Image (cartoon, rainbow, N blue to C red; front, side, top):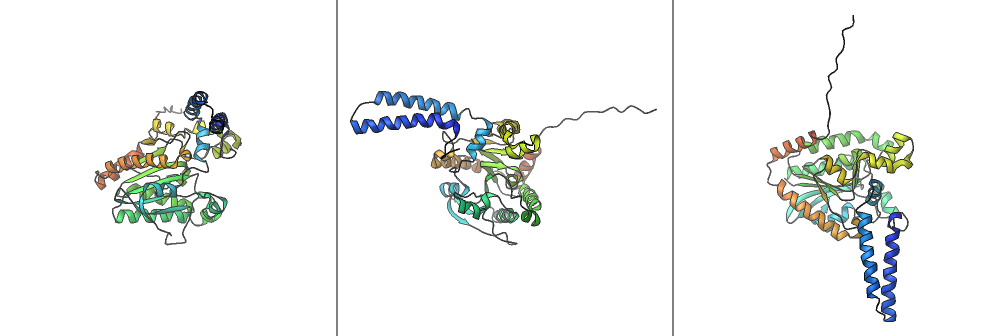
Length: 327
């Protein structure tokens, strides 16, 4: 990607430039070029839909990583009211790579959590490029347990390529923090809605991804491993990431067909980075709809349904093996 433009977007970009030039020329020279402009706009609209409705799995991954895509705090600001961020895991420190706090949605108090990436190099360094340490997951779990105590629904906005894999994270119990978060989320007696807003990679995403409803933005991806790491493991060649992306079935369309997610949240044409407000409005409407349904379910039934939901995932076959008697 160069200057915020993907390779497959160049023909559309050049067409849009031509339209802008004609519009400018029309204004400056007082000439009527409306017919030519209309023809080009019609062509651009067709090309725009042709491009974005036929993206490959790898192109979807790249779109989910666009640097201008809305972050967790962007969605919090646009969707929720009265957000109060809370800090610290009460054991070690505050991890800026995960943010969380209390807010309201249409007057309903709830808890919102999610990984947070930076917009520039300085912020990315401060937030560890959105890769949470174990204290980040312990903070998220603390806030979720607090939500259960005060009977607040939980909204988990997920955009993370994976948990931080550094030695210090392992020394402080990264694997245990992820496992404990998964275990506790499974039994929390409040509604939980998880949304993959961008990247949903490995245990880093699953640690805050156990919910009653799993939603996914149209151009997000969700997988046990990133395409690059998968390609490195399978072929010892990370340049085969595009092949790995196809094999992993990580797009929203793949996952809803497999029954791994419950709904796809539509994005503006071209991706959420094209129109933050429209992306947030689409997500807000979907959250309202799902939250209204979940609030009607008794707490014990909610947990039973949540456990049953995840137990249904995956398929297996049993094959009888006949062992001949050895004489």
